Amino acid sequence: MKPTLAVGLLASVVVSAVAYVLWGAQGAVAAGIFGALAVAIQLAVLALIEPVKQGPIKPLIKRWGMGMGLRALGVVAIAVAVGLDRTHFPPLATALGFLGVLLPLLFFEVRLLR
Image 1 (cartoon, rainbow, N blue to C red):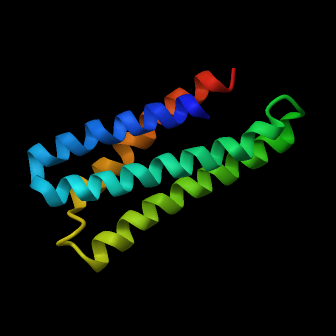
Image 2: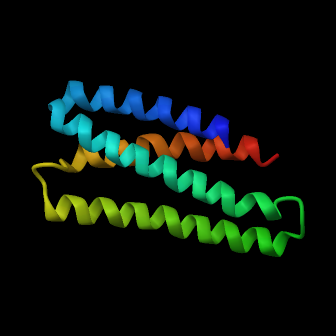
Image 3: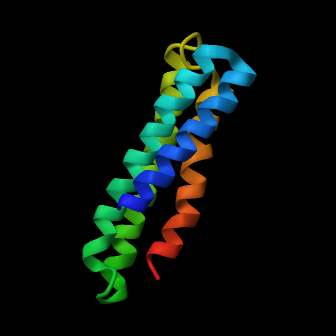
């Protein structure tokens, strides 16, 4: 989990810097918040999968599906945040923060599960 945390935090910093250049300070804050949410979700997913990754496939698939549900809740959180307060959560910066961190972590997860 430590490598995932390190990669996630690094990706959050990079995405926040890009958001700062494109949308200013508020965009960087929104991207940072949702980048941190993506890291938290990914760590929770890895905690779900870790106990069953060496066992039979059925429990692994079930927990993988639960992880995808958590990721989907992150997308819902973007919609809720943007819908409630566009000033503090600009849509593109918020989505960039979440997806810009989550997608690299998904690719990184594949390497961890080998």
